[in-house]
Image 1: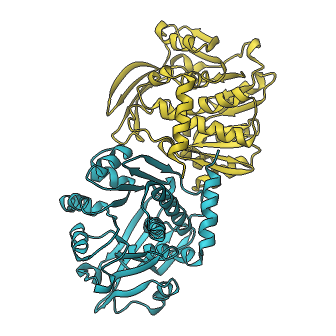
Image 2: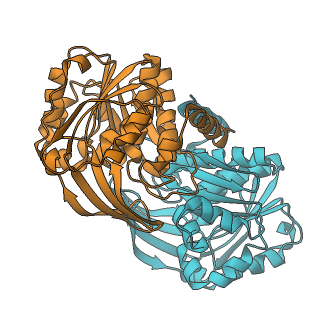
Image 3: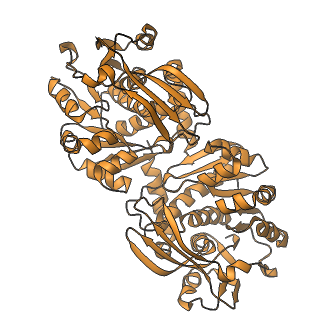
Length: 300
Length: 300
């Protein structure tokens, strides 16, 4: 089993969707990523929480054996996000955002975590992402996510980062925005040209694309009838994807394609209940079962 | 080889996209449908044009042996549509719409066309669609398309129509609107419950869904890098889909899935050039080649 190092946010979310509301749910990119990836590999998390962080939110990480030795507890409050999803779940509004201890997040990676197989730099400042890469002694693969905010405000730093990572994982709108190209395939190829091994483009309910030197690979999502809360699905996707790669310690085209399929599968679970609820119910057999179901649903 | 009867519009379009503009291009739902379906089966078209219809626009039908004996030529002008697509090609604006002779389109199906294998009722008034079904003597399968305009203005007639057809082909937004259900799968199942054999949901660049009593089948689209003009892609999809079914004269789940794949393939060709240009270049070997490429692009 391979080892993953993830650096990202841990948050407390208040989420409202047409199917109800859930207060004080455990969230953050590193959370969703870890709880998905830990079904496949050993996960070490580097992040920060405030002293207000409720003990019960530590439990899910414990259950999944996520190593929290790199989790800093600081004076102050934990990152908080409050959002509302509309009837069309693709649309959401941020009602409140308090970075709190996350605003001064300048992580030092503990020495014993500096030699992972895979590094996932979740959506944080690209300058911080670059600094984190410098802290790592050895690795086999580095992947990073980003968001519209950084594409606008730190474009140059982000483009520079592409030369230092192997896989960029981002959604379709972000890919178009970063590449300044409306066609999502051309956007992927333009980003790839910077020297990446692959660009993985998340399309939410529409599946995912792998843009790779050798080919383009496309998958629909697994058809989910009960979508309750889309929060965290993208990071859960990344967790399934990189978790699978870490499990196999092999990064050829075949494994990349399979990894994207596991990403799709994990994302499709995530949305079925609020927050991390669905993820915490899963075992490897559920994941394998849904992968087979995805294959069935698209075979002809 | 099976026989298809299609009833729908023939139009002259002026289209502007970020990649250029094309004036006076042959368009209309029955046009795109016929030129796609005729690669698979015999197509008989019932429609109406005005006396202004340019002779050169008859040529594409001739080339594809589309039977135009049911095409009425009336005093007046042909249906005209002028539209503009934005940078995001999913967004378009209608700049001008002149129904002209199409506004009084009350087709009489010629007797020799009243026994087709498959009927396709393209997007027209659902009351007219119902009337057309009554005119037909025998058939194996009837499919119909619709649009937001009819869902709003003729909802009852449309719901009643569902009891008289076998397959409803429509896009995702229309399916949600007609079913009054935000989840596209649930929308499909709700529509299916009216007694349909299948609901085929077109998702444009995101592929298609087949909602069938026995299963749900999902496909991404074939990844196209050069999307020039999306006009007619939905009707081209329907043409590939029903053309394939007519060719096989077999409507089991296996054939339905394959039909959706041919629909996706034909739609992916359509968008590559303006209007019907790309469709007119195709032969069966191109279609088979892209079907294989689609399988490759999604196999893992």
